[in-house]
Structure formats: structure tokens, C-alpha cells
Length: 486
Image (cartoon, rainbow, N blue to C red):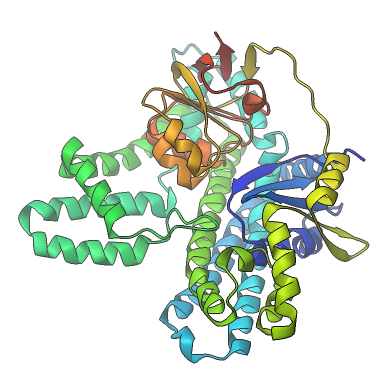
């Protein structure tokens, strides 16, 4: 029975939208994979685990890698379709932003949820194959690492493999997070010259980027958040110089790549495979931005439902899509509230014989114990993973998985996480190095660490299981090795 494993873990819950990963997406995924990918979703007090069957998940990841190596157009088509479907979702949500929801009928509110779910699952369907490829043993990352090792044997260079890896993977596209950074730098330039104009620009900035750190439950960012960031920029840097450096970096990325391609004598096919890796990163970032924005906008709909039904937001987020109608039926409310409160504590959601099943409490725990692969670890001193961002660092371990963990983080600590999420970026900025269990080159930790130029080792699989708060470690992100000292 023990064939499932936690491929991803995240903070926040929105079963109303995410249940589709379990009951709808596996059916849609048939066009990408030979075998159906069954997934169990478990949620414990706001923390989600996505658990697929390991052998089938790995086979699916290998299928994606083989498709990329066979035909480079495969990734380009996924990129095109992901962008198209993401844009449809964004357009729909922009319309919702303009609606006066208090004036529409209950049925229309339910229709908004159902339409959103269809657009959402279409977007996810094209965005997930490349994610599965990396989540199942970092397949593309390992392939590219092996390719670079063979190339480096033939040349004399002072650079580490990790340096070349970063040169080929780095891309000027970093999504809306980078656009927000550029826009805020431009506003800081105006602050010194025209404070009234700066205030106006901040308001527009909030309207454009309120959703950035939303994830699944928020919060939505307000003026105070961006003004705090603006003050930090003013206290640390010359905004004009910082803006110029960002523009120079974009040009330098392409120059470095061109020089490295010549130095390593990459073939056209090899250049295309690295380009495909950058496309995979684009897919991850663009899809995640669209998802985060859309969930932030849909909070407006959930709040309107809360106002009309007297269910809490937390309870609404633990509903299945098919249950949304029950929120409005008086004689169903009491029983539904009891069920939702049970789910808030602990739930396991899966599909058996085409039937959706939600287990709660003890039954859910017994089910997960039976289905998950059992793993036992001894006294491990050396942990190996994949380099995401080169460099070295040493310090005290801080396990940071969710936002409430961030209070532990001090400047120079080693941030160790199952998989980093946008909400813990403030803690990541304090780290002298970052280590994760999960993730390849397209992971959040890999993307952010490269942007922040912080040493990062990803895909260790066991870091959070063998390390604890207060352990002293050395991180060599040039070689992908983490050594436990004390």
C-alpha cells in the first residue's frame, strides 16, 4: 500500500479550487501521460501535502524529459499554451475586479466559482508536466548537470560547474516580482523630487501588485507594505544606480551565456536543451503569477459568499466545488459547518472508483499512514543535493516552512525548508545559504536564490528530516553538499 509520497508541501488551503488537482486534473493529464497519476491531498491545520504515487510520478517525469529531448517544440508548445490559458484566467479575474458583487444573485456567484475553476484547471494542465519532471527526482536538472560535467572535462577553467549552470539557466524574465522591484525603484526616484506624485504612484502600485505574496490565503498587500519596502531602498541604495544595475544585469546575462556557449563548444542541440530549461522556468513563473493574482481576486467572491451565508472564509476554503451550492441552503448549513470544522483540523482527499472521498480526523490519519511510503533516517552528517545558486555559507540551521516560522530567522542563518514559498522571501533575504528537500531548477528556491545571489542547494530530499533548528552546518553550493558540524 505504501506507494505515495509528499511531492510538494505548501502553507495555506483552498480546497474549493485545489480539489481539482485530485479529481479533475488526473483525467485531463491523460493527454500528456501514458499512466493516470493518482493524487492524495492531505491538509492539517492549514498545511497541505500533495502526494502522488512515486513510481507512476517518476515515469511521468521521464516521459516529459524524453519528449523534450526528442522534440524541442514540445516545451515551446507547453509554454505557448500555458501563457494563453493564464491570460484567459487573468482577463476573467480583471472583469471580476470591476464587478459590484453585492448586486448579483447567488446563482451568479456560484457561476463565477465554476467558471473560474474551469479556467484554472485548463491553465494548470499545461503548466504541470514540466513541474512533474523536476519534482520527480530533478530529471532535467540532473540531465543538464551530467551534460556540463562532460563538457568541463575537456576545457581548462576556474569556474565551477555551478557557475556555468547558472549562466545557462539564468534568464532576464523573472515575472511580476522583478517588474514590481523595477517599478518601486522608479517611484523612489520621484520621492525626492515630488512627494505628491510619489503618493499617487504608490496607490497605483498597490492596485497593480496587491496580490504578489497572496499564495492561497493571503494576506493582500497594502500601501504600508510597499512604503516600508520603499523606505528600505532609500536607506540602503541609490535607486537610480540600482535601476541601472538591473538593466545592465539583463544585458550581461545574454553576453555571459553567449561567451559560455562558445567556451564549452555547445552544439545547437545542447543550446536548445538549455533554452528548453529556461522555457520551463518561464512556465513555472508565469503560471504561478497568474494563479496568485487570480486567487487574490477570488477572495473578493469568497468574502461576498461569507457575508451572505455566515460561513467563515476558512470554512468556505475547505468546501469542495460541488458543495458551494449547499452554503446557501438553510437546512444544510448546520451539518455542513460540522463537517467543514472537522476538515480544518485534518483531512485526506482522494478518488476511488471514480468517487471523490473526504476523510477527516482519525480515519484520515490512518489512511495516510497506510498510503505514504515509510522512510527511516540514521545519523546523517553529509547531505547531497543539486546546485541552484553557487557559493558557500555556514551558520545555524533554521527550519522555515511557513510564515509563522520566520520569527526564528536571523541574519546569516542557514534557511532549510521543505520547499520555499513566496511568503517566506523576507526570511530568505537574511540567509547566508538556502537548502531545500524538494525542487529542481524551476523551483521557487532556485529562482529566488539566483535573483538574490544567495548560495542554494535544492532537491536534498532529506534536509528537514535530518537537520533541526540550531544545528551548525557548512553549505557548499558549488558542489551541492551540506555538512553537519554540530
